[in-house]
Amino acid sequence: MANVKYVFVSGGTISGIGKGITSASLALLLKSAGYRVVPIKFEGYLNIDAGTINPIEHGDAFLCEDGTEADIDIGTYEKFLNEDMGKENFVTMGQIYKTIIDKERRFEYNGEDVEAVHICEEIITRIKKVGEKNNAEIVLIELGGTAGEYWNVFYYEAARLLTFRNPGDVIHIHVSYVPTPNHLGEPKTKPTQLSVRTLNSLGIQPNFIIARSEKLLDIRRRERLALFCNMHPDHIISNPDVKTVYEIPQIFHEQELEIKVLKVLGLKSKKSDLTAWNKMVNRIFESKKKQITIAIVGKYFGTGDYQLRDSYAGLFDAIDHASWQESVDVKTVWIHAEEIEKKGPEIIGNPDGIIVPIGWGERGSEGMILSANYAREKMIPYLGLCYGMQLAVVSFARNVLGWKDANTTENDANSKHPVVHIIPEQQRLIEKRAYGGTMRLGTWDAIVKKGSQAYEIYKLHGAMKDAKIGLTSERHRHRYEFNGKYRDDLEAKGLIVSAISTVEGLVEIIELDKKIHPFYIGTQGHPEYKSRPLSPHPLFLAFIQACKK
Image 1: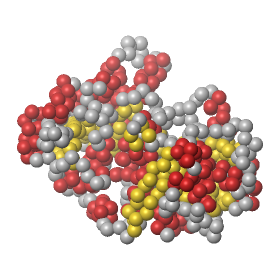
Image 2: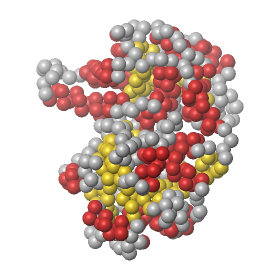
Image 3: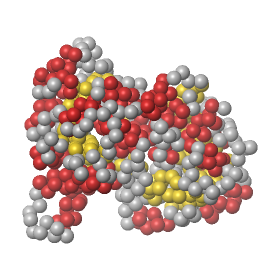
Image 4: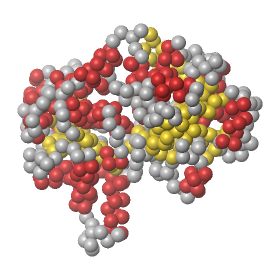
């Protein structure tokens, strides 16, 4: 087998400028050119995974098939490559340190003094393992944060070592910001020059610069960057602001990025076939037949004086994917659940649909419960995701069965009608304060009830693992569940339990009959994490269709 090639993607100037999109776009281009590519993301924080991080702090934790709670960039890889990612694709510095300390305690270093170089060697080991497991020809390594941040120095030293040991098989791509200050009116290259100097001080010379800017870079700016960063102008790739990130592969393709990368790596240059991708992007920009408004009632929108989309990144992506396929222009209205508690559900207005997404804890929960009831009474299409499903059950118990104290034990341990309660095994974990990576995580199978709306949705889109028995599979991330003790009472009043898990017998989907409500579905799973631009999730397609009506 030929040598595996390695492509490092680093960032400069500021974080959040699109390393993940750059990495995913290049991976898509290389895959479309016929190469086996696998991405891996390295994060600088000491958390073992992203599961215990407040979504306001670091965005929506992306949930993988194997239960890995990862950075949202892992979701970007899945969406662009149309492949499942897992624990091998996501590494934190906390994982690295823990692995080394555990090895030392097991005497695996045979009495050596464990030093910083062992950290670098563990990083390199992870890179090589993900390549071997996926039989990859190219491993694409995204380094979190920016060059110059002290907690990232080991990642850059590992990159330098791998480059030194594998001459000709490693290249470096640096993503940096080229701002255009309003009072000057021209792009300024100095921030990127300084960022590259920092990279040089770490022993790394980039082969390519991906210049993030408001508009396409002109020749003069490319020449300035090439001159001061010791590069050829053709290796300065422009990455301007766009309407949708799914345009980026096309923009890179027009500049022949994949051909240039393959040439530097010594691989046969082949242009990528982006036929399916181009059709999808064309759908995004085509004239839409209708506009709809969807209200999202959440609790993680705010960060200081600013609103944060990344807290629900997977949800917004899933809405986009479905709306593009349905040729609908969607306007999302973000409503803080706590505002509904203060002012009442009437502030929701009359949207075409309501979504109550993921959440934890009591804060804002009453606003979400009011929203679920508002959607039911006003006949507005409703989609409850995880917490949104649980609180829809609470709402139904309170307002249809008259159990005014009904609740989830997550918020009221003394409720006389705990229609949602903690999974027994989870209770034992909580008592031990074992929070990290211990929820009901990853893919779980369920049987969907024939004749239910959920069954028809999955069947229509060919989304069942086994259509004969109605077997489906969704990703999960929760500790609390529908309390089966109250199932008969709730069903007697019209709540339909339309899916049950195959292993534990847990309620997975609830709904209302279409004769009673046009669309009212809650799912314990997270369909938003399985949605992709080329294959939107059936539940979101059905929800958008209901909103159109």
